[in-house]
Image (cartoon, rainbow, N blue to C red; front, side, top):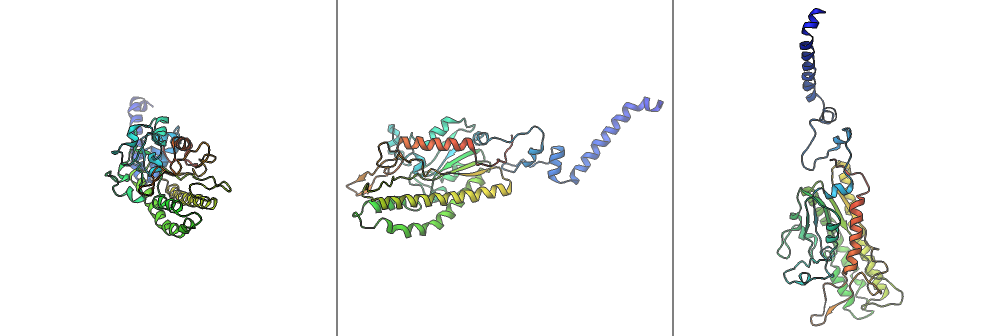
Length: 344
């Protein structure tokens, strides 16, 4: 007892040091996941690496969809339906130097104002863009993919309509003799382009996630343009042609949705932190289609000298982009409908 009394403090200290040393020696003998859960060390902290181990730490709550989206930069990419084509409000919108037709009324600006993005907003959608322009230059600008990096937390884009040649399809429907049948005869050409578009979209999504593994990637579909009112011809389009055009738009949206869904399933399977989401905007203009009293989309405008359809034809106007902005902001808040694998 006397010996313990004299050396008790030193003995206790030696015992504590022995336990700590043995624990440290034992750590390498267990798996990384167990070390992470038990000791809080050995956790993978590489950019974009899954951090599921944090869930086991007491007091840790996963990021909300909005927190995940706003922790970095918002990057807006895509084609004319994202650039704002068709909604002009200030001189810069119509400037010749604005070769991508990015306008002040695009939904991108409303999203940027609605949320505070820690990394700011970058707007690089470009009218006329096809899937290839995510990997190659357009209008003198770098490939759209190069605007995304590890600090990107939210990406929105619309793309695919130009790959299928919808502008030419519309022109083929409108700039023909009435009842010629030239509109719906383009069906086979559209179907032939779909497999390549599917592969290109998948490559874009993969490229975005490789460059920004923690980003929420949101793909937008395309709105229905025509009201299909019985007995009402519009811009040389009979009701049957309007229905056919709307159906082609729905098929394109389904294709985009399938690509997004497949990519997101893979992220869930692998435990990755990002997400791939889809916004179905097909019915966003219901009651406000071309030719209605308060349309959300521009009608036909033809350059008679060149006998060409003007670019802004059948693109959203300011009210249309406001409607799209509401859907995008709602999706940013709501998230992908599944838990995100991101932690503070």
